[in-house]
Length: 314
Ligand code: 9Z3
Image (cartoon, rainbow, N blue to C red; front, side, top):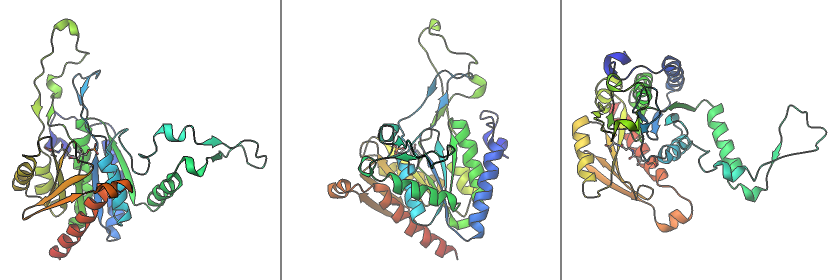
């Protein structure tokens, strides 16, 4: 099935069948409980330039939008399938990079009654604010089976996993939401045109011709999950074109929402664009000072739209 859509230029990655089965089980269980489930895609894609890859093309995406949004969707009661770029921001963990806990956490020594099979760690509560709450939130979501994370690295991994995730969510109909925040490359070098070995500088300046990546939004909306509530993101660096481009995407793919954002202001300002509306969401300095994140507003807005969408269907 995957080969039919993606073709030989995007060979199936190893482990796809196992991930597809995991996603299917996850979606089927939550679906049978009548739950709303969201696929959050997050992070950038790696595009190899050589088959035995030494070099690749990548992009700026940190995955923070996806990670924070996944947390907000879980708080809103969604089951979250988190399809993310390996080593990009991860829900509940992204606020705690190693430098925050490497110095703060200390193994507890000399507790005679503690069996050697146990590891006890301690920290000054003030040295890791929010850490215990984040652990509890993550473990609550994972233990309840409300959260499943699946990793991709390359563009090819992403395309196959997106298709498998869409097929897993299809039976949920309008209760499934697609929140496509990953920054997916528009360009790639086809497998058939890729040199096998490392490209050498002795060959002189490098010229590469890249092909356009097929737009997956099209089969997603038409064939893979035609009843789902679909949100894509439009990123631009030029604020004068972003709304126009968001509108064009809506007209082309006929999905429900585009979230328009500009590279530099993406943490504090977005526009939710639909066929007949434009809603600006922003964070004030005061809200930012309190540690609020724009994703809380995005998710709250989209959740209301999703509920209205489900109700229209029925
Ligand atoms: C986005 O626009 C996301 O909001 C960001 C989030 C990637 C900007 P970070 O990961 O940033 O928190 O650092 N995602 C989609 C970007 C994109 O490539 N969209 C395509 C386009 O603009 C359409 S699918 O053409």
